[in-house]
Length: 279
Ligand SMILES: NC(=O)c1ccc[n+]([C@@H]2O[C@H](COP(=O)([O-])OP(=O)(O)OC[C@H]3O[C@@H](n4cnc5c(N)ncnc54)[C@H](OP(=O)(O)O)[C@@H]3O)[C@@H](O)[C@H]2O)c1
Image (tube, rainbow, N blue to C red):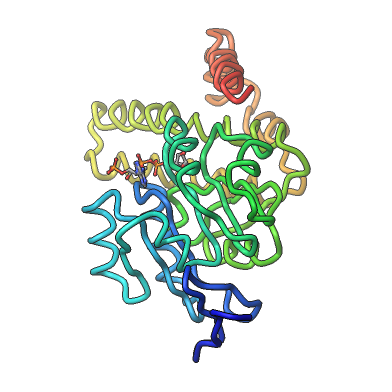
């Protein structure tokens, strides 16, 4: 145990950094502080996690400085390695093309828990890159973590990580990476989904509804029918579509027209092509 001492907060310090102990796991480091890390930091800092300490890598300078100024548990450190040396759970959130270069420059510890948010970095490669860290997982958070209500698909997550992520939404464990990639593909449809809602809002405003009301109604309408769908277990969208399509009614009319134009096929073809990027 030479060179290791017990700290007042229950952790152990070494010359090269911090050794994590079971009862003090809430030292969380972020490598890459962009849009998704900023949302997670905000979600965690507003969720009442006990004993939370967050360490940010220096990039992006503006975002990391803003978060450190805004939230007491957040510290911006001078290097990526300093983040690892201070943290127990390390969240990797750089863009896919940079991940290999960034990770290969770092020295992980065996007691690190690593959570990768990097879309195209597969588990086996990730595991090799963060050796000797033994607890490694992949997760798909979305910016909705800010409101603590995000569905959170995860692969390989430990109980500790699931406990942490419950502060951000609902962890959904998958058994293999193929399932993770299918769910990840859906998150690539957020832009076309919002664009569809944007088109419908504009259409509504063009027909005399105040733009604020048009936008708010479109958001609320689709949120409320999604909420209804979520109440049935298992969710059965097809039954709901059929139920809403009164013979001779407006839903039947629009449903037939949109399906006949191939709109649904366009979405599944786009999803097929996004999925190919994971393979
Ligand atoms: N956005 C989402 O909703 C979302 C959801 C799930 C997963 N993800 C995954 O999360 C990762 C990050 O996504 P993002 O949307 O947050 O991207 P982003 O906004 O571009 O953030 C990435 C950050 O990494 C920083 N960075 C670049 N080089 C670095 C280095 N060498 N060391 C440390 N940091 C470095 C960048 O800083 P500079 O600005 O200074 O270059 C940037 O702020 C991606 O792999 C993505 O697949 C994102």
